[in-house]
Image (cartoon, rainbow over all chains, first blue to last red; front, side):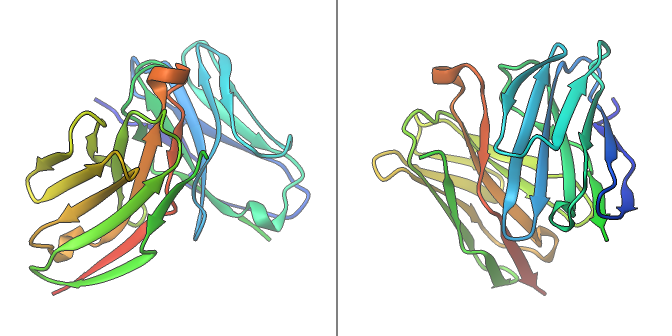
Length: 113
Length: 115
């Protein structure tokens, strides 16, 4: 059974650019969450989608957005990149919005120059 | 009130020793407390989890101790091995009350076990 797949694994952007990250959840999982991981800050919750609808949203500016498709795959977009957006972006899926166990992907490492 | 405070930030333990990581929370609505383990280049993976109706849960060398009155929980790694060297995150979720099962993570503890 394939795990959570995130692409790309690594990317470098410059300030002001935008980036789109992709996440394919485990087959049968309908909930996808996104987290930003930085040293010292741990895992900061960005948003969660279930059945193409955003269910929860963290405290991030509007430059961070996401969406979920009918096949449960999800994308997140960051516009007008800032140096502080450099981080590991993790996607996690779970079977339903009420399931406890999160399964994480390996993440997309974003570096903003 | 939504924070989960984790300590220490880093920990060095000799092989065979006991590693202890602590977490504290404020929100009494939290009803699920997992620990995640993350190796370099990998995403976090569920290690062990506990609900507040029990005070301890053990899985192999890993034990969660839970103190509901103090609103604290801890991870104990017995007979620590170099392969346990990783970053550990505690978390809390309040699914039963809110229905959203939103996770709040601690800031992580980087554990290094010396051979």
